[in-house]
Image 1: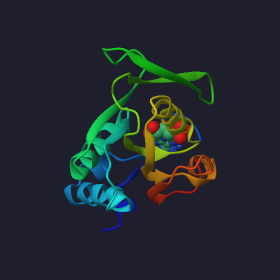
Image 2: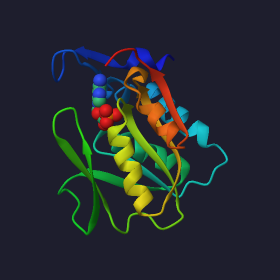
Image 3: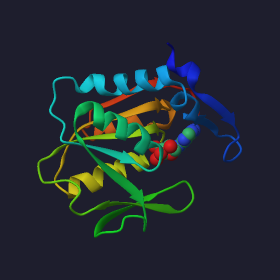
Image 4: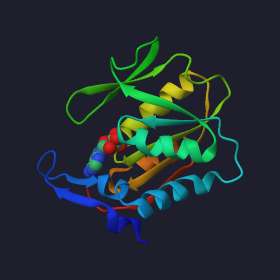
Length: 175
Ligand code: AMP
């Protein structure tokens, strides 16, 4: 199955000029969801992954399934103020303003092999903030995997320049 055909594109959402790549149609298609998880796991074949870190919110759905398939633990990386215990936080720039991503202090141990998962990489700002959180916790980032890459926004390249192996199941032109 061509997974790209299962993704719905909504023009001008949430604002004019953005082509929103909606993965809920992929998730709702049983065969597509299984294939996506299989393909996300594939580059990690033979590697021992201790934890999968998923970025709120769509990274939770994919990352939970990936963690199960890898027999790894799952770590939620959440928006500010959502995690109940002690956290570390990294602030990152958005087009207008900034945002903060948080992780529990005890979520990963020093030296653990972690795979980062999210639905989509655009500028890479969110993923790089997640990598900063994991690096502060002294985790080793084995790979970052996304369903969709928007290569014109340069995020995947920024991660590769930082030495992180990056994979994506498909890419779309534009924003
Ligand atoms: P960025 O930090 O620029 O790489 O943006 C990635 C985050 O924003 C991901 O968590 C995506 O879910 C979301 N995102 C950015 N652009 C889009 C888009 N065109 N369609 C769907 N989600 C997007």
